[in-house]
Image (cartoon, rainbow, N blue to C red; front, side, top):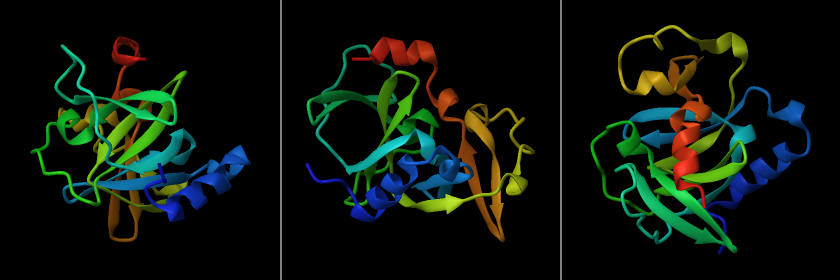
Length: 168
């Protein structure tokens, strides 16, 4: 199966060579009108929506598993994970395959925006201590001019116990 967007694949390939080039690099994606980011070092690839197989008794935000090039990946609907209103999947909806520890999972996003350089000086931890559900997953808030990007801590989006319960 072809990758979702060759532009992102090329950018991701360029970052695989040197870990230092990945510092302060984030891939951004949308959930509704909110822009989120995760560190590029965790991203394996971005693919279009796939047919998934539902897992019995899985948490509601775990959509199931997909098979991709002889590997099986659990898939999380990020809208459901963050308790956002559901939305229909479109041709822009994609799955971001990320590596967390020894496991790889897919994250469903409304769309992928771009790869951004967000200097550490532009990331604030303020606002991440509120009681909202999403704040427990935050690494910080990135500020680029008037633009605000919610930076996720990928290791908190899904716990080790949750990963182990769905790891294939």
